[in-house]
Image 1 (cartoon, helix red, strand yellow):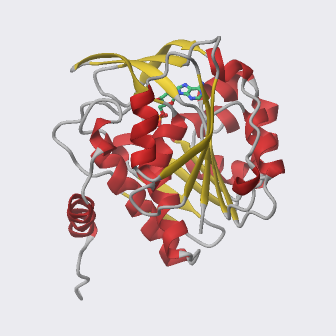
Image 2 (image 1 turned 180 degrees about the vertical axis):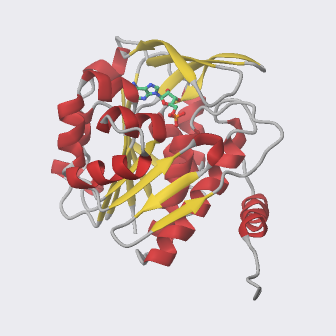
Length: 306
Ligand code: AMP
């Protein structure tokens, strides 16, 4: 199975109560593809960067086995730059600046050998671009998408149009509320379900995630960490782990969807332990397995007769 990832590639400036990092590697596609690369080795990346994007980061993505032939490098414009500032509780953040730069002129052309990908992951990016990508793929089995307040506030109708074309939506709680106007997450799910996606995951930061299908609701915790350094990219890392697992296991049963949410949560918990992408830059399979097993112990209980 091959996975096509499209989304933003960025240089981020991040401020958290623990420090600041400037022009560090970021972007939804970067986190998504890196996270998924721990599960599968046929990932094709589509994105755009400017002249200031470090070659060593392209080399890094390639070292993870990610095909970067679909990454366009524009010579006369800078890379997308996002500056985010987290509050003390780390669940809320402000976007201080969003300089689209290369992303603002992005017109993705999917290379011919990418068009047969079975799994499609549309990272947080302009919803028009998400639609253009879906339309260029021959016969996708699963299309997953993510979005963000920036696009919901600025292009809600287009976001809704994208949702009509996808199977799985991964969204965080505040974005789900913004999109639907509903505070209650079950009501918000029902409204988003009417827009298209059959499977919806609502992420709740340090409070875990809900998986909704037509038949069930599954609740996964977030791994309790004493040190959360930087939540940037946790959502994309979650989605990359989830879809990476689905792609590897080739099964969409309810049990496997639940397992994919735990793999997503496992990867996200490793991501937030360090700044920027550092938490998932160089993971061993042992480390991922240990965290996955810790998740299992966290949620396991025996039922006893009373
Ligand atoms: P997450 O924390 O998972 O929501 O994703 C954080 C990443 O999203 C950062 O690395 C940013 O570069 C990227 N990002 C921020 N704003 C946008 C936007 N408007 N469109 C696309 N990507 C964005």
